[in-house]
Image (cartoon, rainbow, N blue to C red; front, side):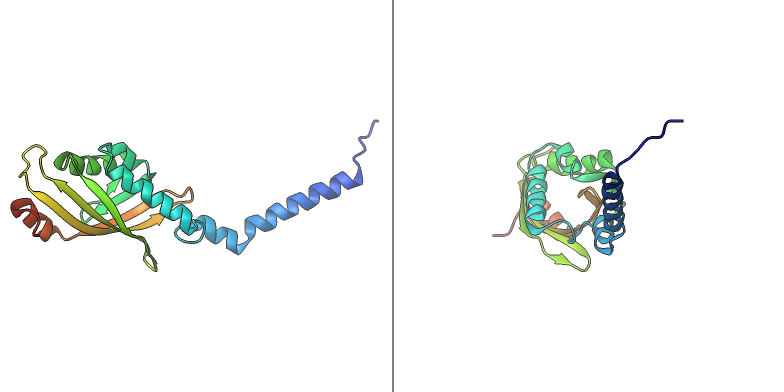
Length: 176
């Protein structure tokens, strides 16, 4: 019977590599990082870059660009309404704003990390010239509170803005 001889150094190396991988996988720090992407694994530069890209997507007049920042099963809730779940539904929400404001520009105001999550503060400016538009200029600020998935995409966004002021501006325009 032929036996295969495996050098002891090879077996020791293999054991060492497997042991390191197991320790890394069970590391409390590593588990926390994969479970919560909010501020643990996304450094400030990555987060700022993501938020700038997201801002550009909203100003692009391409709803799928916004939806691409969300997980496949991500959700976007606006003013405590029914959540838009999944990229197709999220793209439809973006499309409604983009249609209403063909010249829409979104700017990022700030991006603090809080106990609630990442707070993306924004300002929307545009003229309501879409179908049935009022022709009035609107400038409204709001916030989205983001939770991320393990791939660094938005798992949940809860957004809000002053809807009463928004509706007033649709009727009367921006106050100087």
